[in-house]
Length: 552
Image (cartoon, rainbow, N blue to C red; front, side):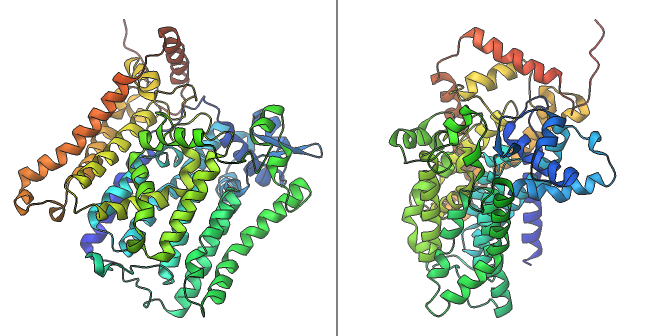
């Protein structure tokens, strides 16, 4: 269970992440097809006992993301997210009628009670896994906060998509493998770490190991039920089992498969009942030529990787990993170099899983993710990249200024994503410079996304003040160096620690200023059109307190 100090620290960080990650959300009047089509399947299952979404379409209106088979309509997404929402909707339906719920209210219900808990669980799982691996407290703090609050995990933990659950289930599978002793702190002692969680491979009892291996398989199976691309990722996660020792391979694989089979069967049954064959996917039956052009070729719209797309995935201002989440870019660069610190089993799975998803996204016709910010399609392996970043953070400790640079990258990631999230988190693809294109024009017009504060004082920039205070704490936690990270020993004094903490914050703010100044300004007419559209969303917001304007 850990010491009282450890439990108190974990509780404090948990409360901080809950507040910041749940503080702001999407405007009610913005229709997101990706969310609506998933919600339609949930409603169809609970209210109509069918997989077809014809009735929800009649009730809530048409939606872009659809598949069609034998005259009936279905969601074009894998069914896992919709199935996860079934118990929540069934529970609230015990005391309500179908007509009591609008599609906006349903999406908010599923965002809050299905996806947000997953996002929070991801923060806890990453910290737990890193402690098991003997990573330093500073690396755990920086990596976990940047992972949850400085990447697309921030917004998509508040959106009814499938990416965040898959990312969290990958971490869950690795945590189970650690409990089973398949992966563990093999090189902890050599690098000055410890095993505070007490989960070295020899500790797990037989029953605990069996349950953990089945749990890892269940996490992988559920991930594949939520996102088709995660099926291969689940297979990649068997690499640690294949390296676990000749005598244990078959029994361990059998236990892993035992956990995954129910979810694989569920997907096969769903495909058979919806599309006539266990191996027929929704992307083979897309509605409309535009959807066919995007997804109706290759493997769900993927063909072969593109070098141009790989370059944009790294460097484009509104989608690039280096420019929107440089801390994860550091993790991607560090992963190939941390073999000894992770051990062969975990290193192989993390590296191959990350490379697989990078190649899949780079070969997709919609690699940019439509209306979004950052690489949302890469979210499923963000936990693996954060793992590489945390271990890499410790690995560069012997180089002067290296950890300060990594802290600056983490602070920049958090500030950039927060600025976008509190204005409009799902930007159009043509908004290539988010700060001058959207964030600053909206803030100048006094427009912000709905948030917790607006329920008390109305929708205005002042409603963000509590979030601002919480972010000061987050940035301080990331930037503040641990005593052992400072060289020479005299820098342990408080004023030197303050100076060391100020440097990454100043560097991050300077980088944001460069993004604003270096970007070409959009024509005033286009900015005015965007602000007018945002003003309409702002004026029509239904989730905030209405404040009566003062008498003139």
